[in-house]
Length: 253
Image (cartoon, rainbow, N blue to C red):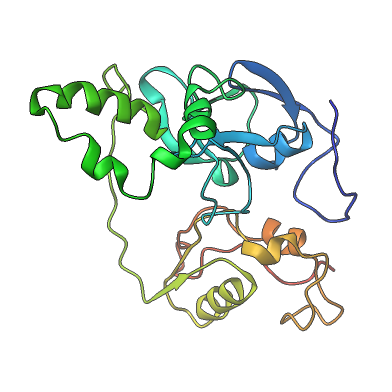
């Protein structure tokens, strides 16, 4: 595994263990705690997509929901999911992901040739004016544009899972599981309020990547972001006693 990782203490990535995943038909290795994006970068995979219009190479530029380029097709068969952001996909052993743009491949993309040779013939908005005549040709245009668009595809087989939902009725809803969110949920739970904490990514938020958080209640000498995240329940919920959905956040004796 050719990796370029920064050695940092108290990070969530467990470099003592190695797991295998596949991207675009090629097998790589990463570590528990990686996202698909971080594992790809550690394997020196930088190009993950092609731009819609000119087919220009696109890489990973974000670290979370703001990532605009790294949209992947995750898994296969009935559970395949289109347009998952690689920065939000947690790595697991056996993960299978594929590109959603680039034809016939990311390295050799036909649209990139059009972008290099015909860019001056494709000004802004040209597609809104060019593909209107003759009307009978629109199905052909649509198929071509759809292939160029670079978005994933829905499952082609019936869903293999059953779904249910649960209505939560709580006293306090905390949105965001960063340091402030965890503290707010903890205090609300200690006050006897039924509390639900919601976080779109891993618990700890961006603070989970910090090497040290100062002035956190109950930790006069500070606490690492990874330790703080590990003390939080990974998914929102409430205790039978009506407290916050957190493990004991008190310092270890």
